[in-house]
Image (tube, rainbow, N blue to C red; front, top):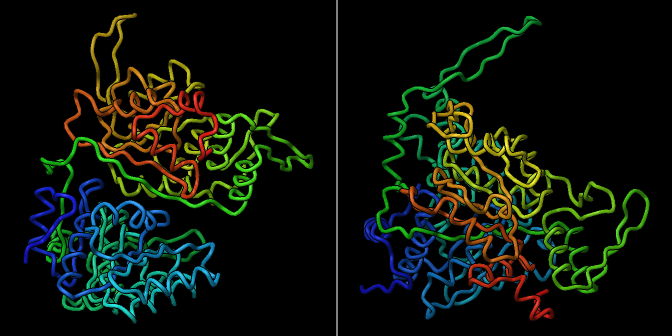
Length: 506
């Protein structure tokens, strides 16, 4: 039958679509920014029109699951297809309104869509919602960033594997399917087919580990001993097995990929953030406790209010002392956790992280340090000497000086190189060449269009041989969405606010 693509597929998307669109089980291991989501949605539309499915269930990292409904489906699914979508919201999961929304999607005509985060499968409400959806519809089930399914004994893993059995079609999506080692493959492929490994004599996880792991026993000082994995073996054999049920696309191999690709990564506010955010947005005044005393923040001016709202979304507020007030612990900060998820998905690819505020950069650097990620920072407080060291560590090239004259460069040892460059666009947005990076994350945005454009071009310039992926971290139902939309539409927010201070989204 003739098939209408709402957005024209790239060559690799079209070839894979024609070959794999009716596969019952498939693993799509494509690099970030190469169009995995569009590829899947084209399959969903095809199977829906063929009468083989009538629903899509997406399980994705928190925030990413929302992006499917707000950005990807409207972009890639033809308008004539009736889509009824529900987005799982953890904080509202126990409410009648939330239950009714999911029930209505599950019983609707047309293409029903439910997107959930992985955490939902650790809750009774989440498992029940997924079960009812799978029971009442013919579902294609997607595990987006499927490496989140890891330990076979984990409650979440068991719940997701159990749910996958009831889907008519199953898809794994990941740019980095093996993040910590070959053992990551075991649970992912059991989601595709619970009995997948049995055909290779590896039905039990212990057998899988013994096949591909090298284990060694060590004696402790107290006379006891322990056994741990010290390496891997037979990886070519494992790769052959994975290749039988997967497709792999690397960014550098896609010749017709756009030079710049933009995506959003949605996050949710914690309840205290939401309370303070709504109070300041509605009243222009904010009262909170600090050190036993009540502090007031006046944000009657539109541009000041917008700045303070941004800071609340980043997890803190300014104070009369030098140290800002932390609204939520770093471990619970959805924005920081989203950044860590994006960096995990990027794998070994170098990434620039742009952040507007000094406190952002300090929190980011601490979070990366806690995760063992080698990163350097470049902002107003960075000394000239440290700026040079940061650039050298990130680019892998150290400048050799003879007095004030540059006489050449030398390679920085691999163990001294940074994977992440965290910077402020007002400080590092001009003059630097960072073409070693192919991923850029905007943790928080400046209002100035020039800073956005200049910062985007630090890696997208002469010397860049690869495509660049730009990710905006966006808090849903907040000014974040309007800021990102304005900047992407080439609007200088600061100038616009001066001429239109009552802009409705502030």
